[in-house]
Length: 196
Image 1 (tube, rainbow, N blue to C red):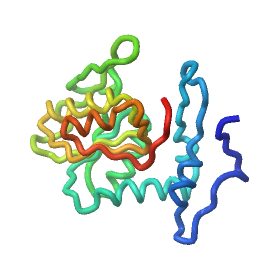
Image 2 (cartoon, rainbow, N blue to C red):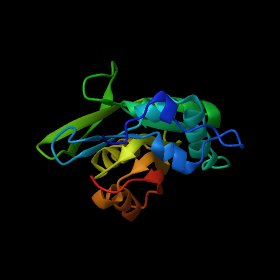
Image 3 (tube, one colour):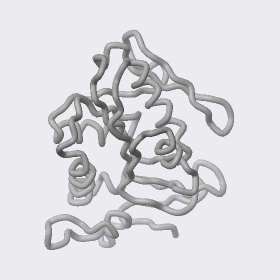
């Protein structure tokens, strides 16, 4: 059985009041063969559902950017909304949703990105950012980097300046974070997992 968590198996807070990084990694559930055979799906909802773990996660992700001028956090649908809203509150800045096609009610910028079979589209309101606004992109996981790269293009089209892209999990074998760094984006993840 792959990394299933039970209430009794959940890590307890350390003396600092926060779980250690190894404990945070144990709070991420691994689901084999989802959404297709051969994939190990890293499910962060189990980490989000643990109060001390979620607090530690947000503290560590936010602390990395304290002192960095940030005007808005852009969260990528859907788990990026959970992280991005909380981080924006802690950083004292605005929040911008980056949504799947057809979900935003006003005029949008749209960017396509490649999937294994075909393409998908993400959108952002055209008036979400004033030109020159400093933006931090947030999502739960970076794999091949297609969605994050499309989010970077959206923010660039709106005239925003990307100060970084942060993630809970990086799957380095898939190269997404390296691609962003190669394009000049400061890409960072709290933890890494092997595999796809």
